Length: 315
Image 1 (cartoon, rainbow, N blue to C red):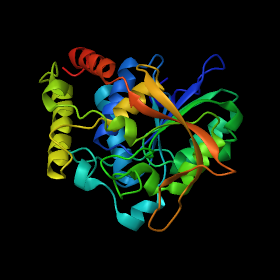
Image 2 (image 1 turned 90 degrees about the vertical axis):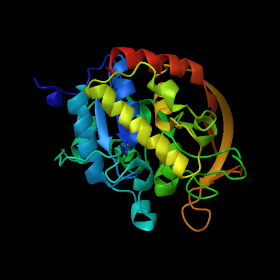
Image 3 (image 1 turned 180 degrees about the vertical axis):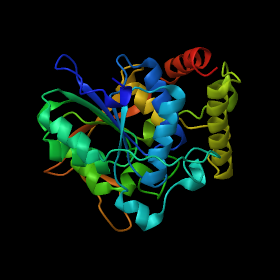
Image 4 (image 1 turned 90 degrees about the horizontal axis):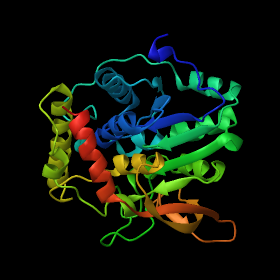
């Protein structure tokens, strides 16, 4: 049986589903997870965000081929924010992976995965590395709420960061801004849903040289090195500093229980759906939902794992 045809995992373990908008740090997160996750992720859903879903699908297919991912791939949707404000190609490159061209890829629609999950009795773990558009829809349509065991989203902003909360507006983080209503549905429908927000992922700007330590000059090493250098240059150009924020890679490491995080609790009243404060996480109120968000992550432990991956995989 070919990896792409692998059926759902058996009842003995949860099914692992990742939703991603496959920009540079998403790509690095997928590589990281397929190196360290045991067992590796079962399904990857391409969701628009950093770039449109067509490019995301091509990026996922390219990564699957180059790094021999066993996960099955599905094509999802573009979030409403893409038409409102455009994508993040100015950060991640025209097709989302720096200077690489995104190949054409025809993936099965996410509705096929939703139907499989609906028919299955397996527990489900879900990691959301982009807008929650497809993740929220899958949970609703497949009736997964009672079967979710580990749901984490990289997104949101809870604590003031140098006079602002967000990175796309003063109030909102990019993933949540692109589809605030889906993010709110995800939080409310997924019991124990946790967030790794900008508060945690922007506490450490990783130097390019420390990320490239051990990365080789083989095909995989050159690809990873080029992605990191492209993202560093974008950070410098945009005034974020001379280094790389590893947003999605840190979130993935926390989700997979590869590194620890310092958690704080908040009561969230809503995620603002529109207007000037679109995508803002509003807290407190009589009908608020309690969520856990990461205040910071174990960056040094992550760096040790990254160097291990560099020596063993990025050669």
